[in-house]
Image 1 (tube, one colour):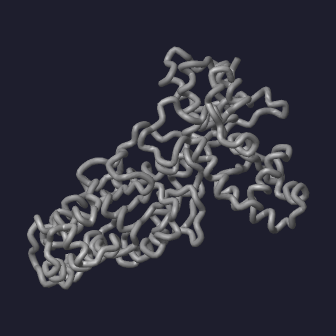
Image 2 (tube, one colour; image 1 turned 120 degrees about the vertical axis):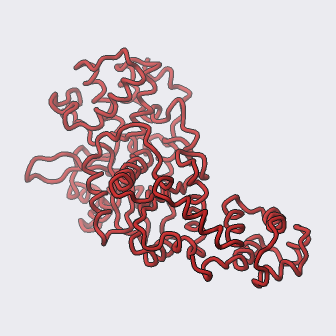
Image 3 (cartoon, one colour; image 1 turned 30 degrees about the horizontal axis):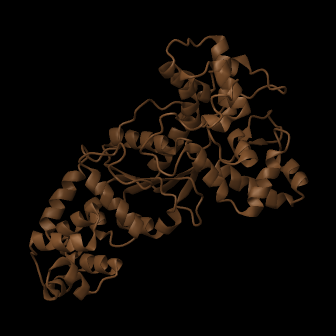
Length: 449
């Protein structure tokens, strides 16, 4: 770590004071540190300030724990280098361990790791609906790189405070530091001096305002030639953060025309959503054997819940109250009532799954929302040509709008006959949100009666 990048106590203190909107005199009054001492610190005249002085200033500026650590480390360049390099070791800089195996995403995992192996694709953005499994896929890719290449991984949650999720551990201070640097977009030279030319993966999980962070991310990539970054987000930003990799819900079996039957050979084989749902069922109800009847019912539930992994897990939790057939009745009549788990994850931010899905729709402009409503009323599967006729919109404009909705995950492509036109459908949960708005659970107990 060179002296230029570590002698930043003066700049750090000036930036913190200005962010707080304080003059040197006001900071002196709040901290009991003299104006002269503050002036000397901000002008770089003090080489080794007392820790008590830094503590008083940090308290007066109401600094976060990460900013306090950054201030103290900046006062001692040698300590900063030792601490950061220790936290950055391959043994400690690892992705959070998974809670369960990854099911149904082998193709997506191979595509993601293949992109990461390509030296030209160093900034990748996984985009998709809340609950689709973006974080889990990024986690699995990070585990592959960490185990195979001994690559340090900095897992940085951007949608919740660090320390509230699975990333807790000795690496948490470094991850929190990265998180604030990305959010603030200022002074990341210290981080680049730690990473240097060492192969490294940074995962920015839940960075929904990624457009604002693009300049910082590009600066990091320019300074660190072997750094790779994965961003997970529910928004398609302009400009995009590197190469976009849209993540769709898991494939689901398609019912027959009357909606009563499902192809028998597709219930589990080639049906990742059914396989995942059955794993949830086995945990919630070990007494339910995967008979043909149970598997068929589960396949219908997966179809109604769109193969959205978090929605499947939430729906399975209601098996403590309902039989599979009752659960299917609720999924057919009021599917939104099932998407919020009875034991929600306290680490999730942004509300329940149904609220987060509603927020995605609320971000659409009026024209796109109206177009999505038109698509929801078309017979399935519909084509781009059919959408253009129904909306009275030029084909090129409709194609662009359908492409945007696909990237957001609000519609999905359906299996088609070889050589036939590509068909699409609006997700069932999205169609229900368009029809009813945000759900309530007051009548859940009676929904299957």
